[in-house]
Length: 347
Image (cartoon, rainbow, N blue to C red):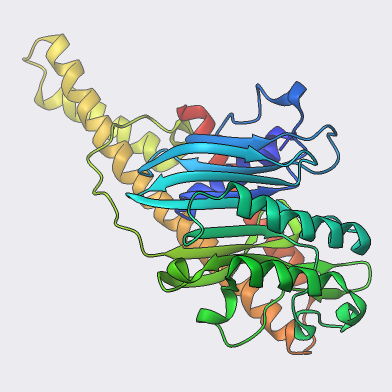
């Protein structure tokens, strides 16, 4: 998160995917950087800051449209976990974002301590959601090359889940293993990013899926959809997206509107003509902007589908064109840069 372009693109991706609560790991966010860390996000971010701009750091993000109230916050001293007791849509929940150590021996101690730390600080043990990068494959089939068989930390992770009465949410809605992490150095794949929930939450899950995230080449996002009562949105207000000024269709629309105002409203006071012109330019801008946004959104959706298709074939052992996959990821990043540029110009 200490890279502005990367931060803004990821924030835009989270917002576009209608994610109301996001768990972040490896934020690399230090106290010196704290005044810039939330710029570009429409909502609130609670951090457990790191003492290094190159490691650790976790956070939980809340979108401004969410009905929530934070009751209290707890942070592990190692900057690897943050726990928030909150009320969301009138339901008391405990949220915990986790980033486990890479080294198995350190991970074992981390899982042992984490279990008691969560139990001690959770106000709602029946409604716990833990998400993050656990650097540990929970089962043998969660690693493509089976190198996780000697990882003894998984036993301690399972002990943590049993002690807190938590379940792995992936197989509630999925029958096939999908990998959340790819190591390009040896082409190994593993499922090390998880959402674990208590039974009360487990039965409210509507869907759980993986998605490629721009600027995140190795990890995929795990998206957990829980049934929550949505509030109806009222009408917002319009701001001109300055990117429209570069579009020939918008330029033509403004010229046509100006010509129409001269020809049909010439007998009116110039101030009234100006107001009419502004309203018509606004309407044209909204229509062109909406159509452009729909095209862009559909393009991004198609890119995501193509990436998912190639990765599914790759997981099944089929040959895929690595250059095609890389180009799709670059295309998605390009489109999100374009969206972010429009967002900055409107802000």
